[in-house]
Every structure is written in C-alpha cells, then in structure tokens.
Image (cartoon, rainbow, N blue to C red; front, side):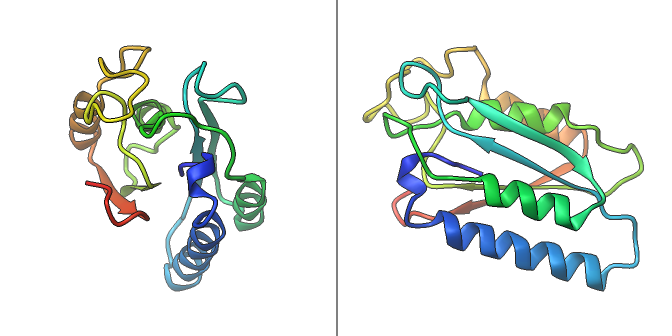
Length: 155
C-alpha cells in the first residue's frame, strides 16, 4: 500500500477496505490463510522515512490489523513512487509453495520511469528495479496481482 502524503484522502478508506476483506476471507474460507503487508513511500531525497516497510506473513488477523493502524499517509515528493521496490519485496515474502498467491497493490501513482511527468527519477527506479520485469517474475511464481488505483487519472 502506498503510504505517501498524496494518499491522505484515501488511506483510511484503504485501511478499512483491507480490514473488511481480511475479515471476510478469514470467516468465509476454510483454509489456512496467511496475510502480509508492504507499505511503501519513495526514495531519498523525495522521502527520508522509509522506501518500503515489510510485514511478512502472519496467520493472526489482529497482527494484520495492527500493521494497518501503523500506516500513515506522509512524505513523498514527486508524483511517481517506489512501486517497483514494493513489488520486488512481494517476491521476497515467505510464500508457501503450495499456496494460492494473491497480491493487491493499492496506489495513487505509477512507478518511476514509466511516466516522465514530475518524475524525480525519469530513468526509472534509482535501485535499478524494473517494475515490468518484477511483475513477469510474479507471474512466473504464480502470484496473481490486482491493482487498485485510488486516483481517477492513474493509468
């Protein structure tokens, strides 16, 4: 989930929707559900708190809800954000081989390098992480990615 300042108008709604989804999945499914959360902002000098903050899988709904409560909309700088880094961290989670793998990206901005308008890193992610390569790797690992754009002009 994007936790930059531009998400200020949406973050509480995003948190509430995640809580609702988690509760519905846990109560309706009769399987072994594991939940994770990755918060992301941007790279310095755009942002100095964190690029990503990873909360690896847990079975505990209360733990997931506590992570959500920590999510705050703050910082950022240019329009694009560290989306590629967050997706890269998805690959590094402790996925179980036999699990159905689903990731949901909640954002109001694209990754660096795809849209040159107001991009502090127009050549792409400063760490060299290519978002297109990452989503292909996710597909190879059978991770289904859903994207939720909370801002109408996001492409």
